[in-house]
Image (cartoon, rainbow, N blue to C red; front, side):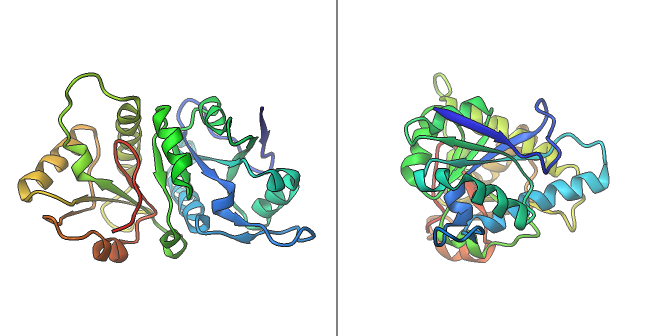
Length: 260
């Protein structure tokens, strides 16, 4: 059973152009006591602020812009569902631009993603990320470091090692989803100049030399994605550079965490 509630406090996005991003509500809010009407913010709170900042800047550049992030909160926790009004009022209290609230069982949450045409699903639960990815929904795992990410700039990291995997045989649905999302993200990035962009795209190649990094760059460019920064680690651990870059999430053709 899936129930969807539209947020009447915000203007709904263009369904044909918007990039729908779904986030598990427990990653955004941390429930307090039963009588607490307002939830405390969770690790994904800066992420939602960063998505919102990109939208604000896009609309500043062009008030008629339709290529915007469309945020959906997914709730499977029974207690939070019983306190659905707390989630909605907390979203209003913190001024978050959330279009819809979806309430479903743990077994049906992927259905809610498909029904809402979700392009990217984000959760702190690796099992949920895996389930969504297996059904062809591009998914990424949020870590505790997300809480310390900036709220004024959305930082997206691409895994170059996954990008340069040979395209042999039919493309998995998750890979097709990754390519579709990256193309739209690249189009969105082109709306801004080189400097002072609210959207920062980074490429990190963990293995191989400069040739591997160059191939990944060329592949992204062929998909319409120009990166702001590129790093070739040549086998070095990712942890130090990830701590420095503070990306909100990492995109691969499947799913991955931001652990080093």
